[in-house]
Image 1: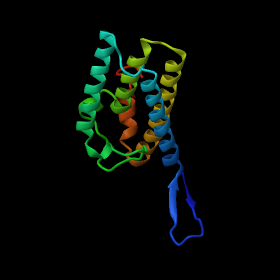
Image 2: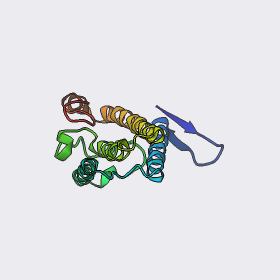
Image 3: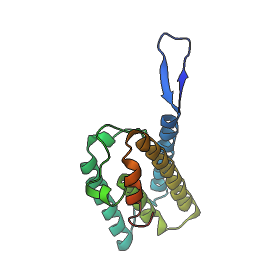
Image 4: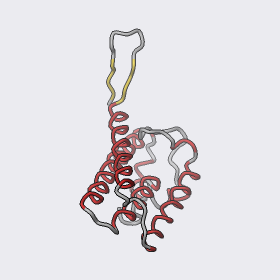
Length: 160
């Protein structure tokens, strides 16, 4: 869905509603992470949770290297190059979002304050919105994404 913003100016801007929603979700996710940081609940202090965070960092790096430069933008817009099915994308459709969620939840779950759990929920919802918007765009752009989405889970291998 798209709509035109014409402000009676010679330049006409075409803004997609999904890009706006995706950008807002990105901003909300960043604010949730900043909130966890300022609450001192972003980084884990106990070994098991630190191990999860180390794994999340590894997953993020692996996914970024596999996906390449095309994943660096604030909206969940589809990029050229087709559906990536190698690296961590064999096991997760959204390993970058998954790594953010794993890292954040590992850091805040050991403290379990209302504020940190609230920030974790806000982060999860914001990234969930981005995932859904991105998947909608991917299915429109790449017909093979539908079959891929039936084979590979979103953020938890073999589960979700």
